[in-house]
Length: 186
Image 1 (cartoon, helix red, strand yellow):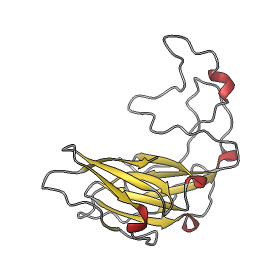
Image 2 (cartoon, rainbow, N blue to C red):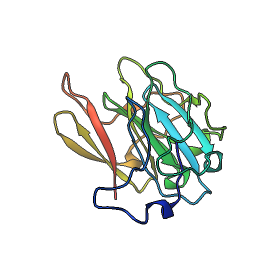
Image 3 (cartoon, helix red, strand yellow):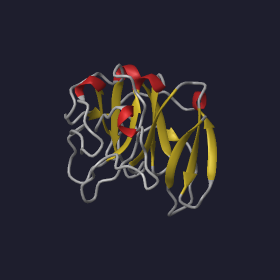
Image 4 (cartoon, rainbow, N blue to C red):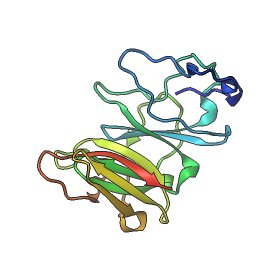
């Protein structure tokens, strides 16, 4: 995780600017505009979640790598980053079309760099977590499958469940097909 002031990006050249240094195998997954008053929420594919104050992340320059946001288990990876003000619950969706909403209040603030808490119960039926969005009842999300099928779901139709649950079926999938990505409809 890194935090850089907007003034670092005011003179962008035609060929762009380096915004972050990445190690071999790393990739940038999310960028958010913030004001130093938010909580950051990171979710992993193995169903772990951490919530910490943005002030735990010091300001660094454009080409820095940043600081550790969450300690990961072997082969685990961060699949999403959201800010607490983006919604009152966290929608978590797994690759086999299961999902749930969990109230933001169930995720207590910790210090950056910890292992976090369980936020999704991974089973053979659910598959790994593929995405997370902070939502309200009024929001809608779109899900796209690996076969290119898109569906749109209203959030007030998705069950609000506890932290350590697997959720309900959000989309019926054919054999060998998984959910590829989710996006909030603006």
